[in-house]
Image (cartoon, rainbow, N blue to C red; front, side, top):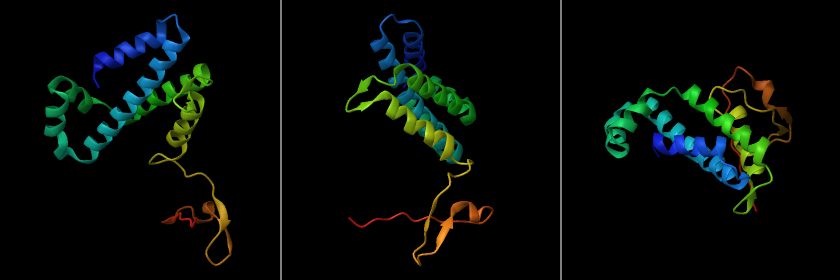
Length: 149
């Protein structure tokens, strides 16, 4: 992870003649940004990690990470996934299509991120009573998903 890698992938994504190469650049730029968001979030929540981050990533890139705003970075990541959906949805990456990967990521970013309203859930509780998650809006709710296969 580095600014140079991010710039290179962004440049390839914008201007390379090969759609396959642009698709790969889009995928790896999204992966790089995902890691970047994780590190920035971790730094905001655990400032005691600053020295380790500076040591691991180097002074220049570490200070760059410290200067970033999570919201702006998340918007950038969302834009890359949207581009992946719009331009490269049918391109295979491993066993999956890029569109499937991007759709899951966009759902997570748009609906499951901290501060977002949770998507509606309708089901029955352990007593068999029907419920909707929205019935509990404004209250503290703990969801426990489990299964027995």
